Length: 146
Image 1: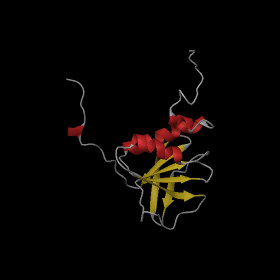
Image 2: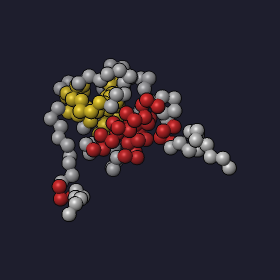
Image 3: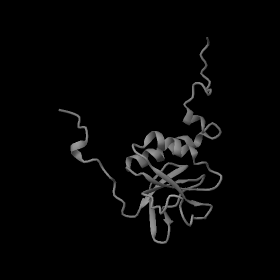
Image 4: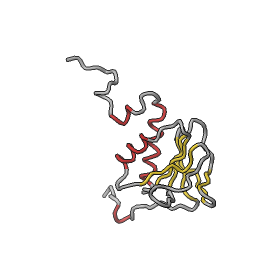
């Protein structure tokens, strides 16, 4: 048997296969979900145009987040949903997916301003004004050293 260095469906992780047609989105999608995980956020808004795909975000979030999450589109082509299937929705973070640069802030609803905290090129992560990280208390962190 001859081993191939060429990427095939047999030697490429499944999540990477979703990006076969445009690899430029792989790292930004993974980085955005990693940032969401670091924020301990489980109510995630998605802001994207109709021609971007959200399925890989779901797959990556399923792998990376430690507990169940809710992900809803907050804006598609300038249209904001009037209601959500699972009831009211107030995301603790929004992932923006675009081909061009991201604004410094997004408005969700009438009075909710979300500020960009990380820009990964094809994706960016926004959190509500005044959002505080849910850090793990110091006594639960693994400390190295002496």
